[in-house]
Image (cartoon, rainbow, N blue to C red; front, side, top):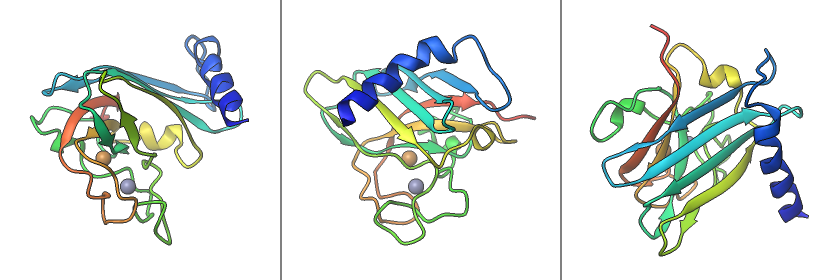
Length: 171
Ligand SMILES: [Cu+2]
Ligand SMILES: [Zn+2]
């Protein structure tokens, strides 16, 4: 059942929102930038249900477990991507293992094999288009290590390997 649901959602993305954007359904697409040789794309698309579907399609990712999050500022200009700020937090605590969590920007860890491919679709029921397109925008970040789903404020996931501006800050 899970497999079917994931495939069905992935299939809806190109047909659904690539050309049509309304007040209630919006799509955010971005290319990643990386000083670590990672390339690819990430998108966040609100579906008819209201659920945001986050699709990540990257190559060149080091083998291992990586925290992936939506961060609060749409700015990847710093060399270490610290310019993207902390997690998109929405007054919540970090992590699914914590009372009062998770952040709307929190997502499950990605497990990358030897081939360096990180390709996954996540359903995010807490994220909204308004959070992404707020005054300071939003960015997607891939971390060097795993999110422990409990350390505050960001899961102790290590440095930032790649960044993508999902929505620009509105000056
Ligand atoms: Cu992060
Ligand atoms: Zn978080």
